[in-house]
Length: 249
Image 1 (tube, rainbow, N blue to C red):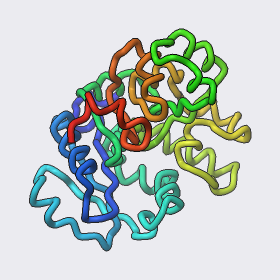
Image 2 (image 1 turned 90 degrees about the horizontal axis):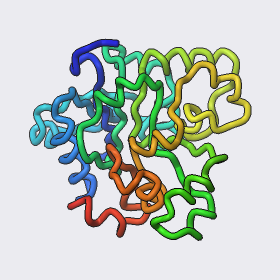
Image 3 (image 1 turned 60 degrees about the horizontal axis):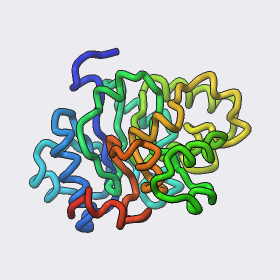
Image 4 (image 1 turned 120 degrees about the horizontal axis):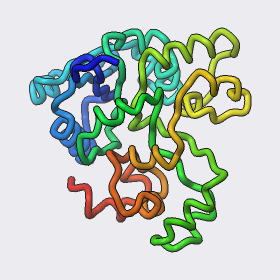
């Protein structure tokens, strides 16, 4: 593994429009403050000019891709499972995808890279049983979820670039174009992906929960022993009241 932070990991922020909401602005500021030690790239449509953003944040670097990748979720999914995208960051061992509905609480990026996983994201904890349990029932949550394999969401996700390039090459050789959300491909969500488990190293969902929360943040907090994770995703969408004490806009 490469040893310096400059070649170890890049922070990669997808931006598809010039105007940002207050929450997106807060997310970007937090990212650039907490993760200031790492090279940070905005990936964007080729036709989008972000001159004001570049002037406000001179440390940002910009990489442009075909506009079609940012015109909707299907295009974005296609970009995230393309070899050419990962090849464009081949100078790094890892990338942290940081969408602007994410929020990071502290810098643990080197520590997560050191674990050697190929892909990590927030576990999508959402079985109906969760909503019947009290917020402090961490052990009971864990029992309910013991047979559950949640998707590791890609909105805030750490990806090992050489490993994902190999994984995508193997997938493309034996399967047709991936039809769904990109994070489900890397999370082995479909039965047909069973043989692919030998080509990607994933954490157990319990460990991934210390990386990020997404759905059911109160349950996640209970399972994680009342500890905040490295970051979170979609905090305005899933139980924003839970996040009010921790995230200031």
